[in-house]
Image (tube, rainbow, N blue to C red; front, side, top):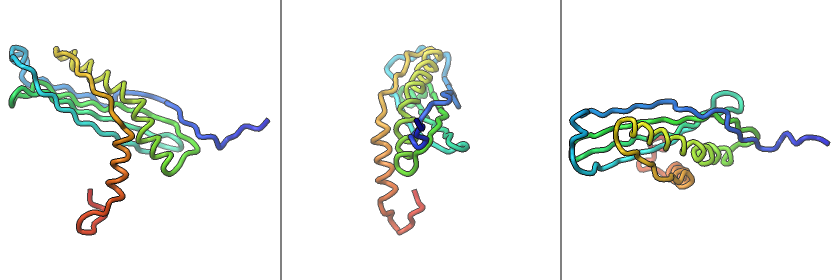
Length: 155
């Protein structure tokens, strides 16, 4: 019996918090303010090769809570993962790095954000599920669309 060494391999090597920042600029006075803050969330994800068949994938989120013009709190977090990916290239590799890996990392990022906000003395913020496939498809469309002025390197 011979083993098939061409079979695609995708494994999680490590999941970790790469960066975490929490600011409560108006504490302790901010805790006396009444009203429901507006929550703004921005997210992105990136992937890069480390060495050999290993890749680092990061999912980043910034959560800002404001009441009128006052920042109540600001949390920035980068949740990372190291993945071993073998025998994949081209679009299947890009999809694994842009969809599958971020889907694995996201629940950990969600927990990191929620815990940080709770430890700051506020009700937890729960990030809504993210459709990484839609983000991936939008990026692909953006990259393949011709740009104004003929400069394909501008983004």
